[in-house]
Image (cartoon, rainbow, N blue to C red; front, side):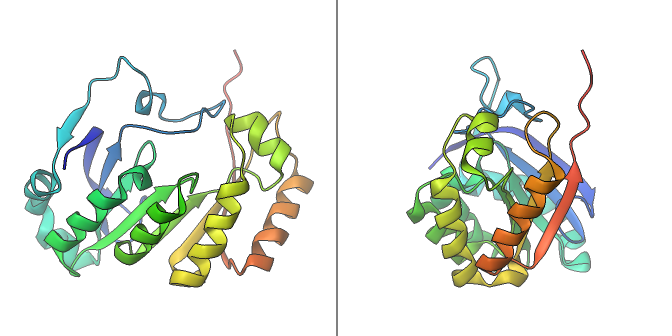
Length: 204
């Protein structure tokens, strides 16, 4: 079972979860966001590193002492890590419960992948973009119908304390009122933790 990675970044502190973390970025994403921060995650020219869960574990276990001492661990990003849910499950089997595993996800994947991830990931950072279907599609190129239903499932499966939803203000795509509407809808689902921020877009 090999998966493609675009980057493995060690010694990240309080940026991708609690404690000291290693960020492992998968290659592959179904979305084509207008202001994508990691376009290399779907660029055909990107050079990737194919690893099995065992090979990744051997690479990152060098920081075990930091992970355990700070309640940190590994954060899976990308790209879309839940496209490789079986990989995540196997990695959890290798590292056991001593590391805190996080996933940064759009949740724009099939439900079975979400179910698998819910069994092995400690904390989810969900990049919701915007809950309005038209705004979401204009920004990502995809529908958000699956995203909302997956979030509803995830909230019931793992509880609100293990989910942080990122709701950005995106110039040219949504407004403060749109974001407030998204937050209200998410609260109705049961979401309690939010990361509210504004994209800083460089003018061309």
